[in-house]
Length: 449
Image (cartoon, rainbow, N blue to C red; front, side, top):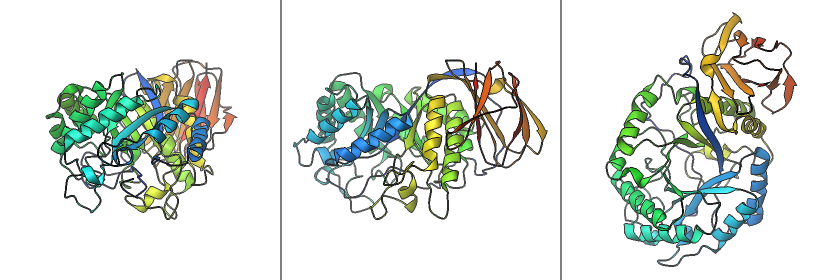
């Protein structure tokens, strides 16, 4: 292997996130019109070549418990071409076969330049995040890997590098990245099959960087535009609700310009999470964050995929790239003991992973009957089976709400952060009464047809 670091992929705090509102208590925006959208999910967990497949299989069992059947993670160039022209895919084939036996699809990202192939220079002494010295060698590697993996029908896509708009993860320029993107994409296409190509996930809505890349490649170079979101961990003063603010610069400026420059692509939040840093964030904080984040992303008209980071915490003492929070982003501890958020996400997947959802926020009639509304968020999703799924919270206020639904239902069920269900008695078939909100805490309901 090239680098000896455990390659966690969480974003670092970024001072340049200019489009993000800085106030966590910003009032929510007016609901979007009713629309239908696709929505899917994945889990990221990196495995280096040679890692115990028994350990991988134990993680796959957690995937099944969670209800997610797609994996995202790294296929390291330094792992699979350790010497020039020497391709070692034996472990990778066993990994893909194991995933197939468990019904798990694979969406790898390819990166991590081997020392022998790396261009000189860079901000550190390790070559893994340097551009290749000879981009045609990179292209040959991608072609060999994509060709080798063609026999595995569960490999769905290839992503080209990762977080390359951050100097922590890419020591080259945007022009260097455009070269590896164009050549890597061409290699995947030449290897045959119908695998999608993803732009490497960007750490924030970095329009100047994206413009430099897209002006150098054609619209067919990539099929998906992925972003990473770690709001409230990095940066810790930006609420997750404001990251994709419909009245802010993201939807008004970034996405229209990205569509114009790169061609309109599906937007994926393909890496997102929240750290339970000891003494700073609790399991309850993490669980509540996941409920808020999932509802926010599901309600966004452009987000079509959510990538959960990650299934397990990193063991203390393991080298990680970045800050201490990188150890604590898992839904379980290193020994796979489940955190509260595991049960929250399990319930969220059961509610929202239906292929398509109708986002019907605009059809909710919300009345404040007591208390004070200050930053109220409400999201209503109608599933293909007719069930209505409702999320309510106020970032700082404590209103008591009466909710009138657009469709009649037979019964209402409320779910706790631990995933447990309880009948909600104050429901008359159309209205839910007396919903008292505690500041910052989500309440989740499902209404049966």
